[in-house]
Amino acid sequence: MSAGGGGFLAGLRRTLEDGGLRGSFLVRDLATGDELGIDPDVEFPVASLVKVPLALAMLERIRRGELDGAAPVEVPPGRITTPGPTGVSRFRHPARIAVDDLLYLSTSVSDGAAADALFGLTPPAGVAAELRRAGLGGVTVRHTMRELADTPVERFDTARAHLAHALAIDAGTPGGGHRVPQLDLSRANTGTARAFTDLLCAVWTRPSRVHPDVAARLRELMRDNVLRHRLAPDFASDSAVWSSKTGTLLNLRHEVGVVEHADGRSYAVAALTESRVAAAGQPGVDALMGQVARRLRDRLRAAATA
Image (cartoon, rainbow, N blue to C red):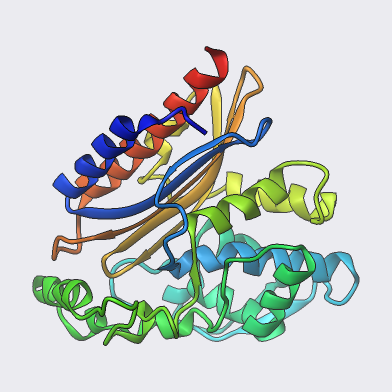
């Protein structure tokens, strides 16, 4: 649509570049289908965003009776001590956890060990098959979360973490290859802002090939997301509900979600970015992502009421 205008989008691109970001953004009005974005078809490794299609696949298999959500699963301890991972990933001892509760840990708490327990029940190829069944393309699922826990950052202490980020920034190729396998588009789990927006629309709107019970539970899991430092400050309020999933790996910072306003308007938002700054902690980058996504939403919303 024409809500953005070339000058508006060019200005947002400059803002991202000035902040050391390359980004792919898309905001879509769930009622009208109107959308506004910045390079929404650029492919990125998706890191923990893959836990959304994983949850969709698991919920669909539970609905069909192929899996029992109450069945306990023996989950080995992750024993991860580096900053970032949550939940069972940091456990020191084995645990027995029901499939339903693993879904909560994987999706709402972004627990990689819980996600891998689910991948043990529905491997990447099975998740990909469920996406095809739902008519959703553009997301490629190739590997489990365990492979994300073996990157260069785990080989450096905190004081030298910037070296891993420098490698992530500088070791890529123009064709999407990368010396770090998790950042190589031919080997990683990948997707685009458009693909994740399509997935969100399938979960939030009707009619859809996603079963209503599956969609309702997935909306609940994303609404309960505990990682709210990235886009949530710009979208969550007393008059708006923000439901989302983040993804973080080395210099990648992503978030996809839906904002539901009290006036009935709802927007799917996808922000996939890579930082060009060699530093582990970049709160300014997270804030910049939220500001750009909100400006896109504001522009789209204003155009709908003009």
